[in-house]
Structures are given as structure tokens and as C-alpha cells.
Image (cartoon, rainbow, N blue to C red; front, side, top):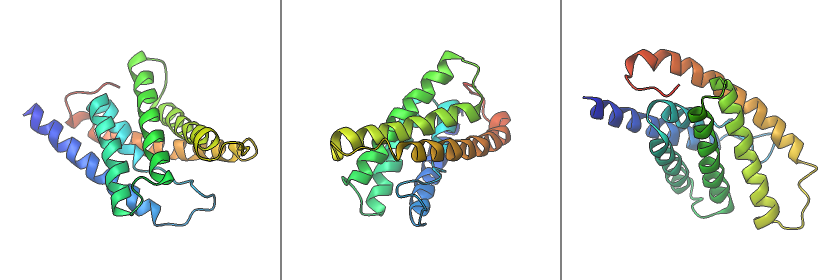
Length: 171
């Protein structure tokens, strides 16, 4: 039964993550490339309830399937998405496993900041070398603080609803 529960949660988290990724990308943003990142709620929940492999699986499918649906596969947007997702997922997992005194809100903020820093690193060193992003970096870092806080708060709300229904939890 535990295995079926895990598969069910993995399926639901993946489907919702992909759906949120696609829907969110359809809305215009005031700052190019900045989105709420609501799909990351389910990557963080997967880290807590399912484990690192499953969270990476969801992140990969979110970026690949979402980019396929949006016709953005192998574009710079895809590379930014998948790189930021993988690095931030791994960093959040390290924080969870280290048992540092971080709340879900704190873990989410660190994940959002890591995501943006990874993307800025790619922009500066791979896609647009020589272009200074130091002027716009504070805007992206501040926006990730806000979006990471929102994602963390929503993750906590969902976490508190399903915590008692799932037998395994890292948090």
C-alpha cells in the first residue's frame, strides 16, 4: 500500500507541477523571466514526502513536458528552467537533510534564490558573456525573495493538510 501511495502522490505532484508551469507561463510578467514559480510547491512537497530522486524526476518532467507543450524545448528558456530547477532542488534537499533550523518558508526562499542565481550565472557566463547583469541582479534577487516567500507559505498550507495522510515525511 505504501508503494501505491507513493506512486499516487508522485503522479499528482507531477501533473499539478506541469500544469502550473504551463498556465503560469501564459500570463505576462512585469519583469521578463520572473514568474511566481507555483510549480515548485510540488517539487518542495516531493522533497519532503517522497525524496530527492522523486523531486528531481518531477522537476525534470516539469521543465521537459512544460517546454514541449509551450514549444520551447532546447531554447534558452528551457535551459534556464531545467538548470535552475535541478540546482535549487538539490540545495533544498541538502538543507532538509542537514536538519538546519529552516522552516518551509526559509527552504523555499533559499530554493528561489538559488534558482535565480543559477539563471544569472548561466546568463552571464554562457548566453551573454560580457554583458553586465550586476545592475539587474538585485531586481531578480528581490523578486525571488517575494516569490519564494509566497511559494513557501502555500507549500506550508498544503503540507499541513496532507501531513497526517502520508506515513513518510522528512520534515
